[in-house]
Length: 253
Image 1 (cartoon, rainbow, N blue to C red):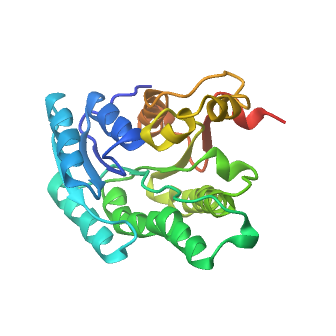
Image 2: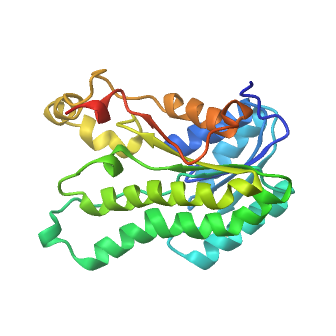
Image 3: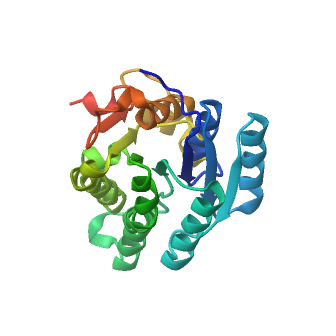
């Protein structure tokens, strides 16, 4: 068993910062060539430089994942540049608001579903033929602990991430015969710029970490390394599974 990804070709979405960037760099360090997709070309260029400094090939593709057509075109471009695809990480997504369900506008619900769920479907549909072409590979869908339990004022986000887990399990069954493995990676509270607002206040930070048994934020590399495992031959008999990396948060009553 090995975590070596030498000779593999990977596409990581949402790779300009945070978890996506960490996964892209971890894949390059493990030997993979990496295509990186996000909206910000300047930030992607910085990540590409870091990938190439590790001795691997990079491919920068830009798209707004809310636009299905441009996203599909970007995935096609990435595959053509790399000459194929072995690994897909559907990491792009997020949440831009918090509000109780009773007060939520349906436009906000629909945008969140498009951002976190629909985009994953669009990207997977475009990438799957290439992944299965050479005997299979690995698809990793990044969900959230919010998708495992109730999330007051974030029901829209939690529902979209729960749907990503369900999609992962269904897709794993559909593609196993192709040699394609599909698993969900579920981070807890990770120290990235997306959670900076919770560290801006001591009270908010204490409240957040009070539910985490390990009493600290997760580091990006603590998500990136499990992503390497899921992409590697060390996880060769693992599909349709949910790998939770949350410092014990989901185990709390």
